[in-house]
Image (tube, rainbow, N blue to C red; front, side, top):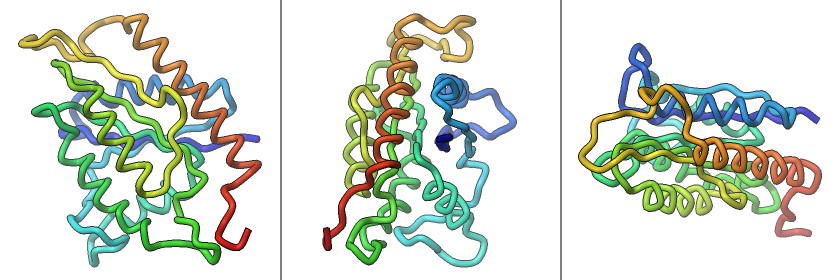
Length: 203
């Protein structure tokens, strides 16, 4: 059974610039491929995702199309850089738009995002990956996603240093290991949920 993964790149950089977040997300998608998972990514800042907490904020809003891609996926990877020790403002906007899932349920009371596995990819030049992943884990779980074990891969450089992840030249072994673990666990859990969805209120 082929599964579908979607990577949401929440970098602040335009698509025309090289992105460390995109590099790490590409590596996650590549690590998922051997588990019969096809993947694609969306560069969120290049879309017109309006502020708000509904699934459609009106004319020109690109979120409804992104939402459709999310809900047709088995695995969603949310990728963000660290800024001021926090997830990017783009990542926070994505989570704010997902807030609508809280009230969007099926006939058995299950959120539309149930049975979709979520993981996290974080890059930055100083420590903070654990804090950022904790914030994203909580928010993604609140809006109905399922978080597997070891569901984050990340890289952070030395404090006060200017080197970006995409300037390293080679992927550090710990990052390779974390990426492989995220892919392996996410694919495993997504396949389990595909075969055995969460029970609803009437079960």
